[in-house]
Image (cartoon, rainbow, N blue to C red; front, side):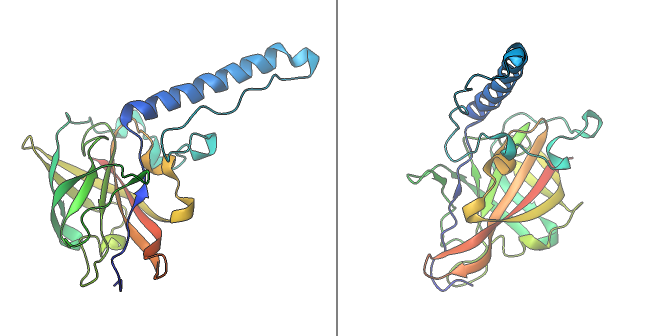
Length: 232
């Protein structure tokens, strides 16, 4: 439990259209480089590529940041069809006794994703300018691990394991069910933004909270715990 209000600001995911343009640009540049290298092979030189394209805020655009886990690119046979866009209303994770309403999250002045209000122990937030949970693509759901007085909604998030299921009740009356693929902790100063936030060909969700040691001087935790899950 933190002795002072923890800061749970996260690296900012990019809006859906800007992420798609970045991926297309990277692919175009890679193809252009291969073609140029072939054309000038006889001269033994390759022209200057001019550097990588501009990246969306706080999201790396380098090839090393592209998702590499098996969960990132499922086979067509294992993909669940995405649902129409609809705002999430409630998150239900039976295994860890989560039954919480949603609030919208946005990118703050620091360029990071703002966390939910710090004084509500049973509230989760979703990145409202990104994909909605159940929609094709990557939806982002964040919650506090604790407050200054008590454990919070994602205090037991680390207990989830591969195959565990949870549900998102949506404003259109539907319920999206997700299965956990895996979980990982990342240092906040080395957060793999593209791997966590990058677009996916099926409907996926990232559950994110703070983890690691609590740095009293910085008033923040040193890591983020990310649970990777997909629609089933």
